[in-house]
Image (tube, rainbow, N blue to C red; front, side, top):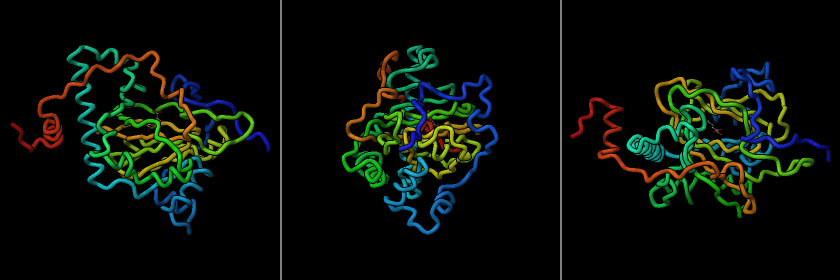
Length: 303
Ligand SMILES: O=C(O)CCC(=O)C(=O)O
């Protein structure tokens, strides 16, 4: 078989280290294509059943990503959104109380990291609670697609939320994991599912992907910005090139992600705790949920 894959590309070997963070040298003339999930699927396979696990797995293997438009319900999104932002507020409150804001700015903690200014990668403990959040656990609507791609013995490696705050900037292009072989293109071994908890639009910084880059890192396929609705799911191969865009709005953009892999895979890059302190016990503020609602809706009165 012909060599189709370039070596090792992952978070710790990001490309495009341009000082000004301008367009990637790998895609100098390529304007991104912006599509909502349904439009992208209709373009990929106008006659296929867009939600069937088989068709989504086929698109995933071909493109390096696929979308499940019927993801979480509005109620599930709302409860998850509230949990994520409340947890973020509690962590910030705790760090302020302990005067540990500087530790966060210099990288963060094992379970709460600062990726770049204003972009946090935080494990939200309660989301692992199957009784409270079954849709992120054994009732996750994307599981049939994940199993179709990785096999029925696949395992869940990790769950967290990327919170991109107003003013966060565009990331560098990167992938989340390496190819496992230098010479042969192997089937997917690790995938991420992104579940935005707000509607994604150009202004609040959706994730930009390079379809087919899991096959060829230097492909000239134009970048794709999927303006997924809250609760729709984007599944992508760990080897697919992507980056989060800048959040130019005044609202946070939370995006839950869950990583699944073949049972034998150990994700050394993303699971490393080396160099990070443990997050101190998180203190809950009095009236936490009510306080946030009141901030969002000044007409709402609280005691
Ligand atoms: O924020 C995003 O849209 C993507 C984040 C991401 O890819 C990362 O932090 O590795």
